[in-house]
Image (tube, rainbow, N blue to C red):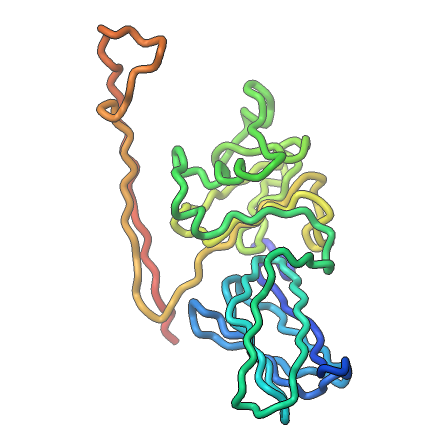
Length: 278
């Protein structure tokens, strides 16, 4: 079984905690609560006021910071993706712990922890956007610099698990393909050998350049697919994608008297998930 790459399917949040004078606050308690599941992750600041929340599952979190003799500070929403190293500093005000100060994350804030160029196709885009033949790599074409290999080339011909892509001028065979941090790249032909169902995908990360060392091994981009996590309740979905000539309109060059050519395509299936009992 291929080894999983470190930090490829999780994220981390770090920062410093200080008072209004800028002095570090050791012993402050930081709680990250994943909104979708309710799971909590806790960290305590060290003597320099620094905290670290490592290996966070991807998703949306709320953060709360508390310390003795200081008002509790909360951030209702902060979203992390696979490989993110988010830095978020906090300044606490003196006051009663029952008083709560709410701050809002600014999505325009530059994260200086990394120089990587990356795009993320989120769960809403995966669920809402129409995709021909249900090939998830079609969604990567939303990202600048991503194109299909020209017809008749090696990248167009040797596609073991669907259409591949060229990114920033690199050949499709120079990309590294991962599912939940595990490589699904054929090292003989440098192609993707497993294409997960769209219904199983939580997000798609497209690491284009200047990515972290753990993503090394290829000269092209890294396409990292994160699967959906389970829950404590049984859940599932059914789908049917229909393409039929009754929905087709004539284009400018079609004969107004000739019938529209018949076309029938039905793609159907489903998904099912739930808890793993101990």
